[in-house]
Every structure is written in structure tokens, then in C-alpha cells.
Length: 133
Image 1 (tube, rainbow, N blue to C red):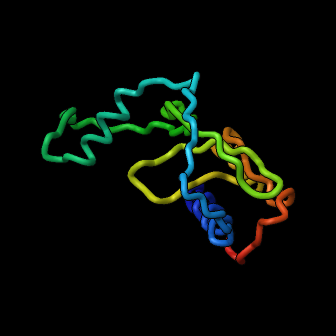
Image 2: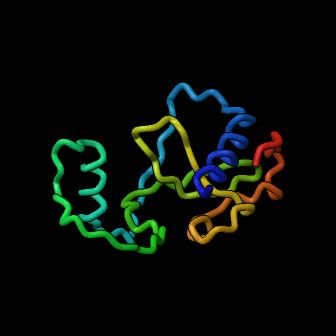
């Protein structure tokens, strides 16, 4: 649900954005996240999903329940980007495996969204709602 909300907002904002031509391209400096924490267990889970035949941590056969909390400590670097008019700075996690850019708006009120800089659509003269939420 959180991802769907972020995806819809991002698509809406980017669908109506008009980029000014820049023959030199754009450069976004990356900033190291001071709250980054290596998460070996999460990395092993990612590897197991990508390469299931390796079975890196063999299951003991037991089961249980674990509450999940998205605290986003695995974001090691981010880029600050200006969006809208007047410009609002949002911190982006550049996913090099995707062409999509995601950032939350102030209409997203989940705990995960509140931990990020959010784009305020009402303060942007260039934002156009496209009927999706």
C-alpha cells in the first residue's frame, strides 16, 4: 500500500513535469546517510530471493511471527533534488536497477512516509493532479 501510494504520486508528478533541455546533463551530488546500518540478515534474504538454489541460510524448520518495521536504515547514500516551482528539496534513493524515481508527498501520512522529506503539492505552481492517488 505504501509503495502504491508513493508510486502513484511520483508518476503523477513526473507525468506532467517538463524538463528543460540541458546538453551537459545533470549531476546530483550524493550524501552519505549518517544513520546507515549494515543489515547482514536483510542482505542474505535478498541473495536467497535472487539465487534460491544457493540456500544461504538453511532453515531449521521452525516458524514464528516477527513484527516488521520500515525504519529505512539501509539507505546508505541519497541525493538532494529540487522538485516543482518554487523548488522543494526532496532526498532521493537512486535505484540503479530502475528507471523510476520515487518520493512521498505530504498526502502520504504513513510512518514510513513521515520519515522522509515530503513534497507539498499545494506549494507547487507546476504540480497538476491527474486523478490518481
